[in-house]
Image 1 (spheres, helix red, strand yellow):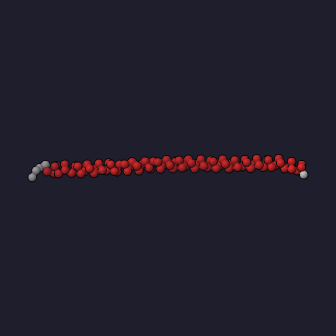
Image 2 (image 1 turned 135 degrees about the horizontal axis):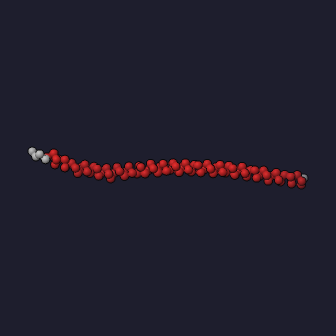
Length: 89
């Protein structure tokens, strides 16, 4: 029996191990990278959604104030027209 037989047996297993590592590098690493990118983009999406919600809220408040101003102007215009109507009748 050869003293180096276990060593040669281990050398024969190296290609199988290297093949498994290469497969892991080709398959698992890209999946992990895509998952990390999706997670990061999802967080940015949440930030954008929060910014959009804040902008929508500001627009709503601005439109509410504008509606109030228009109602005030309508009231002023109607009050100006009433005395004229009273003078005509």
